[in-house]
Image (cartoon, rainbow, N blue to C red; front, side, top):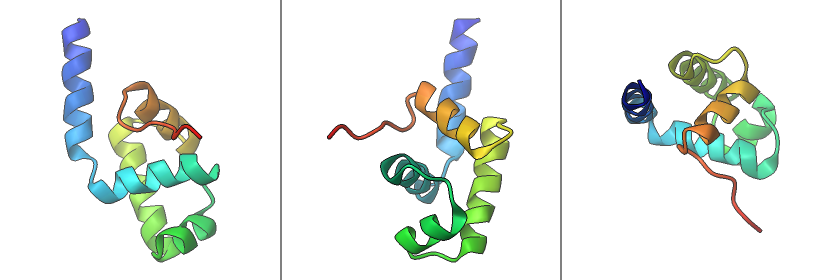
Length: 83
């Protein structure tokens, strides 16, 4: 059963676009999931940020942005930067 979980994690990570990783890492770095703030930091429109989060939530089977961050961190897909 653990092998299946590992396979699922690898499959999920392949489906996340590089822009999604940047979005999630930026959330951790600046400690917010606010659409307008993230749009400004990443030089994207708020609609693009919302769309990316919808895709991430679906791929991670998460119900909110914070849960998606937790799941991707637990799977080792993103990490908090140490200061």
